[in-house]
Length: 349
Ligand code: KG4
Ligand code: ZN
Image (tube, rainbow, N blue to C red; front, side):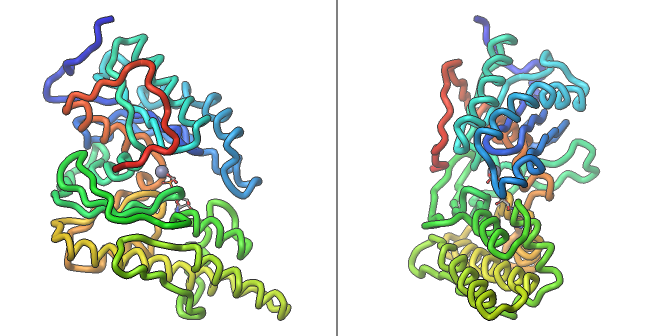
């Protein structure tokens, strides 16, 4: 088969990104790794809410139901057809196997049918590249992040610090030893009676709360760049049990605000320390938890480093970030075979 290895217009490489690693079915057209021509995300949050978390079997069935409509809409919103696309980039992992398979199979079908290159992308790398993306109609496009970069990646499944010396060159400095930051938000939300997903509901409740009402622990793990959030979660649980045995009404707002302050303090302090120690030029904060207002403000209010945090709609799972990462792999020559398999536990580095 004749694979299209050269872009139709050498100045404009257009990648169709596809993402289905968890509970969002998404597709996006991205030009030259940065310009978001279209961005469609079909979220399953309402479906999983009644289970209090993502139900994997339900998630993969829902991806099957929506993927083709999402792909159609992404092309339609871009006013393009597959003839305008130079390559298909798709999340290969990490994520839920049954969910990943749906996106990867759709991508393979399009790649085979149209003779387009197939590029498998690491979901975590995608989150990092969301910091490069801006919408097509942006009057003054933001500058791209400058290397070397320290990236704090905080999502529902991962929390890690990566030193990025150049495009696609990652060195993992540290990661969570137990719960991911987003997972801690989700679990604590459940403990204090707030709905899934926990991050947005804790943030909302915290607005009316006092972050100093409870002194929750900050695991410093000095001498490493690792994180730990299970002790913090247990401290909240202990407080909740104590209040319940005393028949007191849970001060949900104060618990939420104090927990959120402990997470943000831990993430911010360690990231800034690593940025100084590794002498990076800039910081990137990405992943679902980077949507958190208090975390964003902590980074945006400091003057030491230029910080790139994606707009809210690109913090949580989307396909624009997959198309963006896909572009840098495309120009470096990555072409994956059509028997590419998903990798549910694929590390970034
Ligand atoms: O990146 P993402 O969409 O999916 C994964 O790759 O895991 O991240 C989802 C996570 C969830 O745990 C969710 O609670 C958290 O991001 N999250 C937030 C906020 N919005 C989403 N955490 C804190 N504050 C938020 N505003
Ligand atoms: Zn994600």
